[in-house]
Image 1 (cartoon, rainbow, N blue to C red):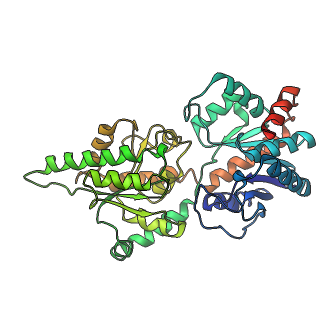
Image 2 (image 1 turned 60 degrees about the vertical axis):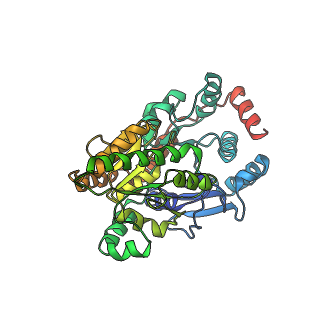
Image 3 (image 1 turned 90 degrees about the horizontal axis):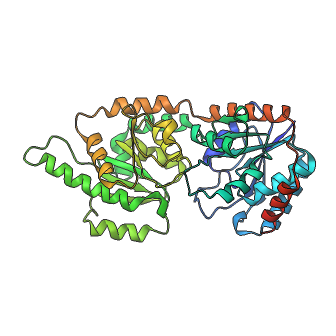
Length: 404
C-alpha cells in the first residue's frame, strides 16, 4: 500500500523527513520540479527507503502552466495508484491537481501545512474559499500549535491534525557542529570568521527584515561601547549574514552607510555541507522576519546548540523558543528591543552554554522522527475516515483554481 507525498522540490530537509518516514510507511515522493529559482540548494540525489519521481527534471514547475503541471501530476498518480495522497498546502497548482485526482478516484487527502492565522493579512472572503478547499482533506500534518489552530479553524477536525511537519536532520547538525568545535581555530580560519558573532541566515528579501536587523546591530554596538567605556567588561560581537537575494546590494549600501563594513560579514549563500561550520563558531542565532510560516533555520541553530533570538512573528517561536531558557522572542519592528537583547546575550556573564544546551534539548523533540510519527498517524486516520463528499462548490472552486 503506497502513500504518495507531493513536494515542489526535495531539499535536504525533505530528504531527511522522507528517509525516516519510509521506515514506517511505503512512500513514493513526487517532485514537480528538478530546479528551483527560489532556493539555491544543490540537487539532493538518490533515495533512501522511498521511491522518487521528478515530473520536470530541468525546470521549475512554478514557471510552467498550471494545466501542464496538473496533467503530468495526474498521469503520475494514475501510474502509482496510491492508497492516499499527501499534498503541500492548498495554494500550489500541484496541490490542486492532486486534490482533483483524489476526488475523481475516491482517495484520502492528507494536507501538509505550515500556515498560521497571522502570518499574512487574512480576508474573510478568501478564508471562506480556502475553507471549502481545505475541508476536502481527511487529515493534516502541520508545523506546531499555531498551525494546528489555524487548520482546525479552516475545517479539519482537531483529532485529525498532527504535528511535526517542520523538521530537520537534528543529528546531522549536532554531530557536525561538535566535530567542527573540536577544530574551531582551523574552521574559523578556513571560513574567515570573526572570533565572536551573532549569526543570521535567510534569503535577502523584504520579509526577512534584514535592514532592521542591521540597524539594531548598529545600536547594539553603540550601547556596548557606551557600557564598556572606561573599563571593557565584555567583547562586542560581530554579525554574520548568510544568504543571497535581490536586496544584497541595498544591504551592502546600508552596512557602509552605518560604517559597519568591518563588523558585518556576508559570505553569501552557503550550501548544506558547509552550514555546520558557521553554527559551530557562532555565539547566538538571530531570526528577525516580520512574517514567517515556520523558520527552519531556527531548528538548525538549536540543533547546533545555539541560544536564539527569534521574531514573535515566526511560526516556530511558540513551540521552539522558551523565554529565558534557550532564548528570547521580540517584536521584529522594535529595533531597540532587538538591540537590547543582543546586548543582554553578549554580556560576559550571560549563560550561553546553558541556553545552547536547552536549545538542543527542546529541538530534539522536533526531528525527522516527529515528522515520521505525525505522518504515520495522519495516514492511519485518513485511511480509516470516510472521504469527505465533494460538493459542486468544491468542484467549481478547484476547476477555477486549475484553469486560472
